[in-house]
Image (cartoon, rainbow, N blue to C red; front, side, top):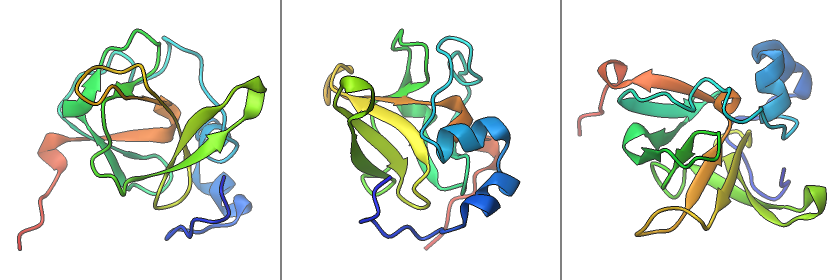
Length: 143
């Protein structure tokens, strides 16, 4: 993950290991991925918000989730442009746009340019990097 971006939530790797499940730690902190078509939010279709599995920052609305056929939860856009931080991922002999939580730096997945119109973007995420908050539990700030 980029050392240039200052993240609001900063913990030691030991703290992250205590807080996160082994799978969430592997994905969020070690830039791992989970097997396609078998993860918790791939066929999940409830109304609400997907938040960072490490720090709870709101990342995606269920309104932007769609079936991409990729095997991972896919979204057309983040909740806000400030929700995610991008880095270049050149691992595995390819160049990809890695998406990280802008609040804590946790690895969320990658963004690709093969998504639906009008933006043409596919935010391909790992279920292990997310938690879901149902619409009924979300409180909106007033003024």
